[in-house]
Image 1 (cartoon, rainbow, N blue to C red):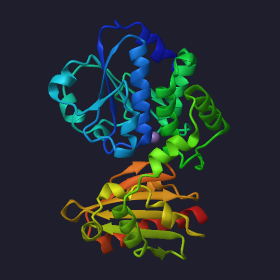
Image 2 (spheres, protein in one colour):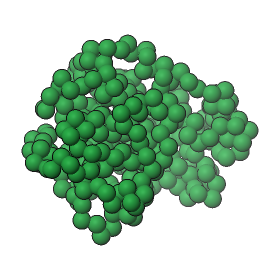
Image 3 (tube, rainbow, N blue to C red):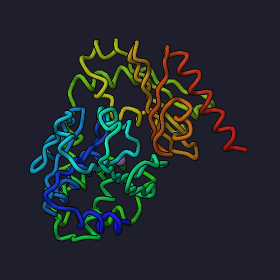
Image 4 (spheres, helix red, strand yellow):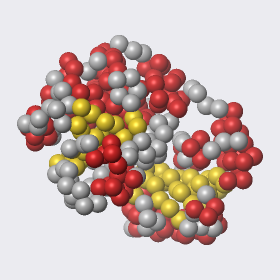
Length: 329
Ligand SMILES: [Mn+2]
């Protein structure tokens, strides 16, 4: 999988600077894979810069030890001779980098597990069967030298795998995924609860109030097979929470018995409605989301609607119902 990657990277002059980017609105998998890849590159002797337009979420900040993720600017980007993108396969997922990169000549490589990568990269490591990008970065170490994985790297990779698989519960989890996490526990010399508590047990009272209000909005459609839940700016004001506090909310409507797919709609007023789509059936939310300017995986995707909320619910549910009809045929 990394044969060409390893051959090429080991032929580069190690004095060059490599820029590693994670996608906007970062999650555990992109931050974990970014840090573990940066460490691997540092161990090869390269100068490395880690970029993201957005702030690292508070519950992931602790992963930054020998690697600090910074906002890119033109000067910093200009100093890199190669870019590697992780956990996203289209340049628009990487914020201001896309605009800056227009007309530039530096090679761009990508390591990712989402379907349909843009055909523009010099090297594309695209494994849709992998649970997470962190699983792929572990594979990079495995194909080079597994003994390089120290506790910092192990925790970064473990965090990414755990957050991208709903704590090893999703369909994407294979025996290999579990074997990798076991090896990371061994190499990092830590207990699973250390990471789980840092990631999940730091919720705020504001977030709890927002969750409570959003649960009230759950509605079921199409013989109770499609669940919709929403969050509005007014609900944020009332609770004191922010839209980023909605992470994971979509799992509540999805967990209702008989529900095949769930949508969380974040109504951002004049900026439209940002949607998270989740499936626990054959309904492919990647295809569903593509009808609304988005995409992702079969079981998890994001999309957008111009609003207003009632129109969005109607149109999005209709599209999902049509797809369920086609599956039943
Ligand atoms: Mn991922």
